[in-house]
Length: 381
Image (cartoon, rainbow, N blue to C red; front, top):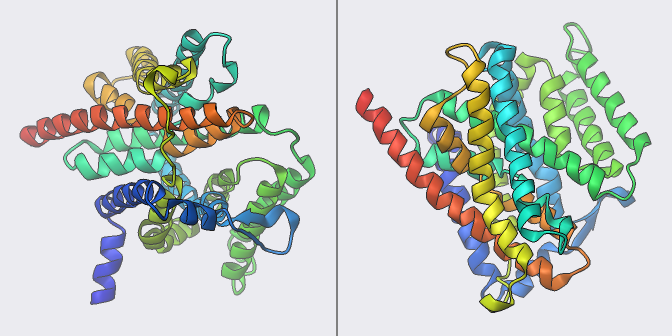
C-alpha cells in the first residue's frame, strides 16, 4: 500500500511542481553559499561512457541525458492530444504552433531593437520557454483551470523548445555530424519496426531500450541537442507501448529527474556587477523575455483564434495566462546565453542575471494571472 501511495504521489503534477521549485531554490542558495564553488566544480566533473561523444560532465549527464526521459513523456502525451485529444485536428493544432512562432519572433525583435548592433548574437536568448517550470507553475497554482490551457501551453512549449534546438543546431553548432544523424534516424526506423505486432515480442522491451539509448547517443554525437531524441522516440513508438513506458517512467521523472535537473540548472552564481555597469544586452533580455513572450504569443494566438473554428484553441485571458507563463525561460535561455556570449565572460554573467530577472518577472506575473483565472474557473463550477 505504501508503494502505491508513493507512486500516486510521484505521478502528481502538483507534487512535481513543488519539488521542482524547491530544487531550483536550493540550487540558487547552494551556488551562492560558501560551498557553491565546490558543488559547481563537482557537477563539472567529466564522466566518460567509453566513447569521445559520451564524455560529459555530471551536469550534462543530467541536462542532456536524464532530461531526455522527461521530453519522451511529454512527447507521448502531446501525441495523444494530437490524435484523440484537444489538438486532434489541423485547425486546433495550428493555434499553439502560431503562438509558438509569435513567441519566438517578437522576443527576438525586441532584443534586436533594444540591443541594436552592440551585441547581436544574444537575440536567441529570450526566445525559449522552460517547459518543466511552465507546466509546473500551472500544476501548482492552476488547479481549477480548464485542461485545454495546460494542453495549449504544453504544445506551445514543446514547439518552442524544438525551435530553440534548431537555433542551437544552426547558429551555435560549428559542424553537424550528418552521419550520426543518419544512424539516429536508422535506429528510430528500427524502433518503429520493433513496435509492430508479432515483431520480436519476447525481446521487445530490451530491444526498445537498446534502440532508444543508441538513438540518444547518435543524436548527441551529431552535435544536435540530445533532448530532441526523447521527442522523436515518443512520437515514433507505438502509442500503447509508449503510454505504458511513460506511465512507468513518470514517478522517476517527477521524483528524481526533474528535481535534479532544476537543482543543476539553478547552480548559477549571481554576477557581482553594479547597476550602472550593466550592458545594453542585459536590459534587452530582461525586456524581451517577459514582454516579448506576452505580446508575441497573445497577438499570434489571437489572430489564429479569430479565423479558427469555434472550440479550437484558447482565447482572451486564457491565452494571456499562457503567454505570461511562457516567459519563464530559465534553463534553455541559460544555455542560449552560454553559447551566445561564450567569448565574453563578463557579458555572459550579465546574461545569466538577465535571464533570472526576466524569468522571475514572468513567474510573478504568470502566477498572479493563473491564480486569478483559477479562482474564476472555480466560481463558475
